[in-house]
Image 1: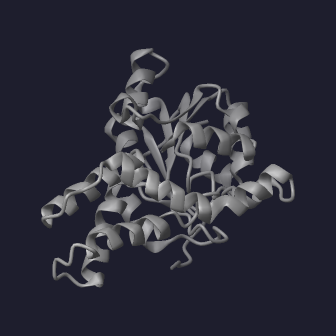
Image 2: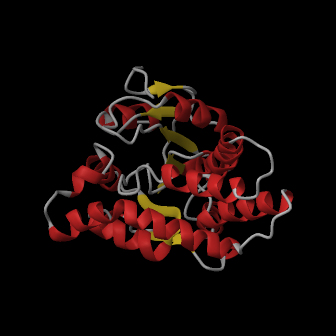
Image 3: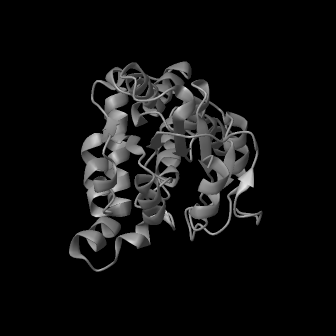
Length: 273
C-alpha cells in the first residue's frame, strides 16, 4: 500500500541543527535483504495461537498478532517472541520458550531470503538491489560532514554483521555495528544511545537518527535528537507506505522519506549551515 507525497515530508520544521552522530537502524532503513519478514513472522504466530482453538477467528488472531509485532518492531526479535509466549499462556496453552519461537521464526525467514543472500555472495547482483535507494550516497555525505556513524539492529548481531558486509555498508560505521545478543537485556538501541551520551561524544540534540520502526524514532526523540522516519514500501521504495508513515509520525518523526534519492535536499533541511 502506498501513496504519493512530496519526496521529503517535513513534520517539524524546527528540527534542525548541527548533529555530530548519526544512528541508523538496519532492516528496512538500509537493508532490503529481509523485506517481507513480517509475512513470515505473523503467519507463524497466528498458527501457534490458532492451534489452541480459543474460539477466535483467524482474522481476529491476525489483528492481535499484527498489533504487537508492529508495536515491538525495532526492538530485538526476542521481545516479539516473549509476547507470543504470553499470548499462548493467556489462552491456556503451554508456550515454548521465547528463544525456541525465535529459532523457529529464523529458520522460516532464512528459507525465504536464502536466494537473496546467495545472489550477493555469488556477486550475481550488486548491493544496490537490496539497499534502500540512495543509501550509499547518504552514508558518504554524512561521513564527509565529519559525522560519526552507528548501525544498530534488533536482528541478531551475527546475521546483521554478515548482511551489512554483503551490502558493503560496514565500512561507513566508524562508531560500530551492533545487533541483538542472546542476553537480550544487555543491548538495545536505547542502551547504545545512553553509551554514546555517557562518553560525551555529543549531546542528545546532536544525534540524527534514521529508522523505519516506532522504537528507534521514539528513542531518538526521547533524548532530543532529530529523527528521520524511513517509510519504505520495501518494494521499489519509490513511494511512502501510508501505514508506516502514520506510525512513524506518531512516534515523533521530524521528517518522512520513502528513500534517500533526495538526500542532498534532506540534509539541507536538517543540518544548519
